[in-house]
Amino acid sequence: MSRVLPPLSSGIVRRAKRLWRQYGIFWLGAIAVGLVAVLYARLIDWGYGEFRTMQQQHVWAPLIVTPAVAALAVWLTRRFFRGAEGSGIPQVIATLHAKPGEYGARLLSLRILVGKIAVSFLAILGGFTIGREGPTVQVGAALMFNLRRLYPRSNAQIERQLVLAGAAAGLSAAFNTPLAGIVFAIEELTRSFEARASGVLITAIIIAGVIALGLNGNYTYFGTIQIGAHFPDLLAVAVVLTAIVTGIAGGVFGWLLLNTARWIPAPLRQLHGERPVAFAALCGFVIAVVGLISGGTTFGSGYAEARGLLDGHEHLSVFYPFLKMISMVGSYLPGIPGGIFAPSLSIGAGFGNLLHMVFGSMQLPMLIALAMVGYLAAVTQSPITSFVIVMEMIDGHALVISLMATALIASRVARLFAPPLYESLAQRYMAPLPQPAPAPVPEVPEVDVPEPAAVDEITGDAPAEDGTPHQ
Image (spheres, helix red, strand yellow):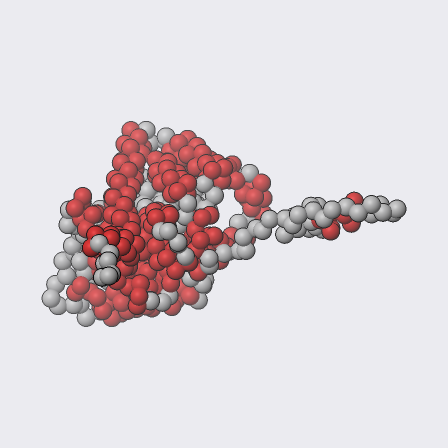
């Protein structure tokens, strides 16, 4: 008898399922990341527009609105969305460097995704100095991570690739910088690059970028700066001085965030620990006061101010970068969801405007571009990602060597003050996860009943000497 061959359709189905698991799920996730990134960006822009309208009509309103929003945002974050605080990039790094399944379930859940978007939107309604790019990285990673449920048998490798692809696609879609998304995944998130993951990663970035381009059109984040064919004679001096200034400023910012116990007065530290909602309201009041002093320029991410300086339509005070730094620190300390990419670029633009007083013969957009990449590299200490981001955002290929040099020098200078910010913050999320207490040991009747403390020490139900439960 001749052997019956399996029908052709069953082979096609098996191959289709295999292709779906290898590529289709990643493509589906990339499409979702692109759509969510665009909608999130429009939501944040609309929210800040509403705040600006309110602030222009009622100049003193931020003194009430901003503290109230801060208190509500911190209460919501601590009550419902633990893990959504800050930019979100440290959470992604912690997930990638630890056990993706366990840490992703805690830091990249759908609840965290919703909270990240909702509370950061609330914060921008209050005029906080936050950006949407860092949160988009966590949102993209969370979207892709939760697609692991579509795999019959998910494992750590699949989960890690999903998180990495989602985070990189999120950055790419947020800035419209596909090259920066790839470099960001290599330099900041993993510090390595696996050949077998490269194709999936790049494809996800391309798909998310195409979705963003389809909805927003082809654009550069900060427009295109015009650089003449002949560079000024003092360009090398300007690169070195700009890198040193922005490196010191970015290093100080990192030191302030990582060493709060060394500069925040003890009463405020106690207030933060015991009454975090009240502490957030105080930070909100400081942000409102700084905003009033600056004429409203320190509110929000700072995108409009940086774009205005590059276009030549904005004239900012020489104190702008310092006031913006105060507002940025005040926005980050309470633990409100929000990123630091866009505010860092705005602060860098302010330093470029300040350095134009020294290098008056140079084009202002050139100095601003150098200072933006210098400050961003100093804060993140990821020089390659920083210069690629800025180069793509301003279409500044003519300045690529100068941007690279500025980023490298500024990053090295910042390292003298503080370690890499995102990696240091990620360590706080990589503490061992709490383990369930062991089951109580059945009691054995004895003549001498042990003391209660001794019984608890055996069963693990009572606190130890330091007051913490036994693990």
